[in-house]
Amino acid sequence: MPNQSWELGYHLRSPHNWLNDPNGLCQYRGQYLFFYQYDYDWPTVDQKAWGLFTSPDLLHWTYQGVPLEPSVPEDRHGVFSGSAYVERGCAADGGDRLRVYYTGNVVDPVVGHSPKDFDYVYAGREQNTLTCTFEGDPAQGVTFGPRKVLMRNADYPEDMTCHVRDPKVWAQDGKRWMLLGGRHTDTRGTCLLYESDLDDGISWTLSHTIDSEYPFGFVWECPNIVRLDGREYLAISPQGLPRLQDRWFNRWTPGYFELPEGQRVLDTEVIDERTFVQWDYGHDFYAPQTFVDDAGRTILVGWMGTFDDHYTSVPDGLDWWHCMTVPRVVTRRSDGRLLQNPVGELEALRGKAHVLQGAVTVEGRLADIMLTDVQGEGALTLDGSFEVFFERGRLGIRYLDETSAAGRKDRSIPLDTLSDLRILVDGSAIEIFANNGAEVFASRWFGPEKDDLAVSSTFAAHGVAYPMENTMAQMYEQAASQAPVLTMPGWNQTIPH
Ligand code: FRU
Image (tube, rainbow, N blue to C red; front, side, top):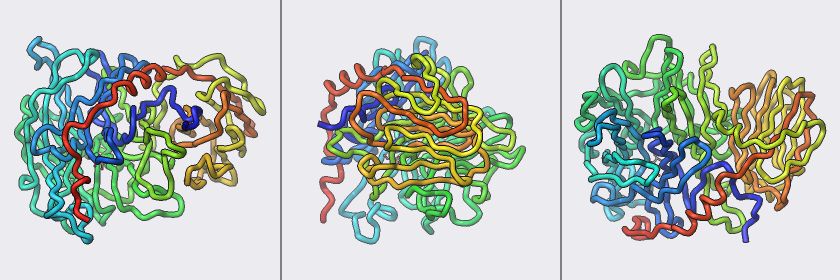
């Protein structure tokens, strides 16, 4: 029986088995729709589909099964990542229609599999761009109409490998635009920019590729555009950055480039890779997606997991891998840095505040801890097992016992001053926001099995710790009782060894 203290109460996790990227994030007909890469027979079978949770308020979620599964030859080995685009007034009832764009993955193990090309980079892989629509009430569940193939590998530029994926679609300048992540044949990560008529979205023409001046990773995945305060950012999830002293600790590191003043993604062909800023320094963060909600907020959700051989997310037989971060509101600081802070809605889950002076016990394993007016150095410790510290000019996290780290190592970044710290603790998921969300860490922590959380702090600060309400328990129970059944065989079963 896995440790019950690791269960999540306000983060979205896979109902069973494997979850990765958030997909198709949007607000549609009064509901937030959070799709995600779901591999519900992992590790027996590798077959990516889109699972879905819906919510009217970003707090109370409904499990909506798996609305997008491999169903046509062009996506038969996986419905890979993609985005949502709300077509205003296009539904039969005069309301809005939801259109999603995604990558249909196909692999031919006989053609492609070789020790020199283990990931089907140069042969044996199709990455098709597909679309489909839905126009009902998402609170009642989502069923997509027929899939339409928009582009195949032969349609992408000639100097692309078989790796072109993760369409992000948005409207700007009276047109519809699509960013795809890719990998050039000379093993450089890149983005492809396509355009379509605003009212079309079916027929796409290549505008240009967006490249770094010097090589920056071997593939760019999950591209996004962020537009705030008149400035534009290109966000990517690059693979293949080297691990450096103070950054890019993970095997793969997502981040963003701020474009120079007045420059738009649409006009950008070359980017200065030295301007790359990493979104999050934690162990468990990759493939974030952003969207703009009806209130105009730019909201980011990341996959709170990663692929790393050094650590695990399923110690002691936990039967679900990974979760998503809480929704984070992204704002722009005057120097261009993007700040990330949990959506205000989460504050409604707070119980009675405990003033944090020295030590407090928070009832339950879910907490929202705030330190403001921080003066100087200190450390905040959870159950004598996990620590957030600011010492000798470094902000970081420390695992005090090996079991709770499940292979993770301590890490820290240089920081001149710490003014505030917010720590979301949700069973085994921890998100740390420092200096108004300028420095963020998302990491898993597999702490002791206990009913309550012991919080102690040596910081000179104004400290408060709130217990948080669990809004997920019932939903996860229901999801577990509705485990999906695989309808098409997954591809990795057939790889010849
Ligand atoms: C990112 C990613 C995407 C791809 C998806 C497949 O984690 O590799 O590029 O579409 O995962 O699950």
